[in-house]
Image (cartoon, rainbow, N blue to C red; front, side, top):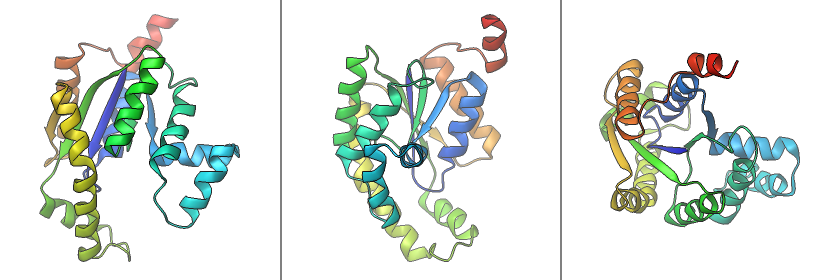
Length: 199
């Protein structure tokens, strides 16, 4: 089972992915973490990724897909996982489908956390990072929207896309996501009950 979490910078996607991971005992695989792992492990792919990351460049589709593929074949991602930050382009989405099909798996659910642009800008400015000027933030959001719109439409046409209102506190948004998971996939149980069942 694979769940994909989408959301623009500042919507709290990483936080929600971690909460889902903790609740259901499902491995959380973020693209950033995948790149860091590949670099730390010193794999051939990791060395290629390092050149892009250290120079502040976007990792190309083929390389990003290869890094994610390497991890998806390993435990704990082999059975169930939550993808955060991948796929980000239509090419990556097609590649992910092919990769999962080879493993007898598929993306079951795509959740897009929706937050109004003005609220995202407010949240990101509140972080106080020197590179987070309003102009840069709006540019990043424009690039994100341009890249991911075709991906969202791709999953919408497959009937896998569900949108969640992210204009609320963390726990409220989490409960909205949990409701979507329950209504789409069914009861997964929580991590504690899964651990007891395995004992």
